[in-house]
Length: 413
Image (tube, rainbow, N blue to C red; front, side):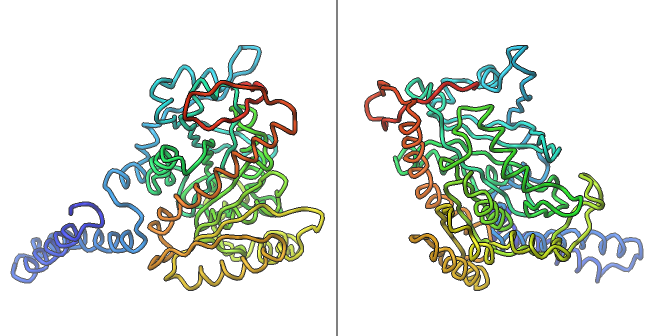
């Protein structure tokens, strides 16, 4: 009842505001009246924030709010430094082995964060990585896992997937029920700060190369550093809100690097965004209504609604999955229109409508289980096919009751 969305919490705020206003009306001392007016502003402001939070159903517990807003949750997640280099015998795998309790990780998986610097974009961002329990189990010791890149909305950050959407406990329940297959979850910071909304775009003429970082450099880093398949059909990409636009845009532009794409409450044309002044990371944010105003060809390329209609006939778009809140007519119309365009090129595009939901976290939380149930088994099947085609599969004895997966070539993790 006292959680951020609890009725009793709202009642206490109203009671506090009413008491202070009554005090303000009854007292005759000027200094006391000023003090009462100042204090009354506090519950009024908190009430307004709480109403917005309840509308979007973002923070359900004080712990989630405190962890996300203060970053204290990030401090509780192990931070692993990048390897120094092969000459020093340093690998991300050795860093994980030193940091993780392998017995516990074999049951619950392992979440860590690290910093990735793009070789072309020169962007340096935090990346959260979740390794499923199978990553630490002997039966999978040489298996190269498929992966899903999960993209957050704006404002927000990658830890929202952990503390707001609860992706890890949801995924563990699905794995235990055998409704999902093991995959590595890669959650990058797509904006470089809560003040920005870059929409995973390479912003001309000298702006951040966000699309390059998210679509190319992060997956390349993961495949070099972890036991993860190289970018391709065994990679998925998914996101909510701005992250859903990113997933659609990157999935189409980099169709050879992603076999699957999931969009939760997405839009399918770039909107106004907050970008760093002068294109310099860390610079003050300025609002730009259309970053492609002088670049019509780039505008089409980065508008999934338009680009899907010009998608190269020689290529196949990734398999796609959509989810929206049924009460958000704008999101629903956008998803239905995009779905029609895609189905001219690829049949069987699921559209999940969450009843009664709008553009809010409750919809995204409800959509996470069906997304993982749809995507991860197909990723696992794709990974098996790739290993068979490349001739790197060998027989492995698996514990009774586990799903038989082929082994893969050794990796540096």
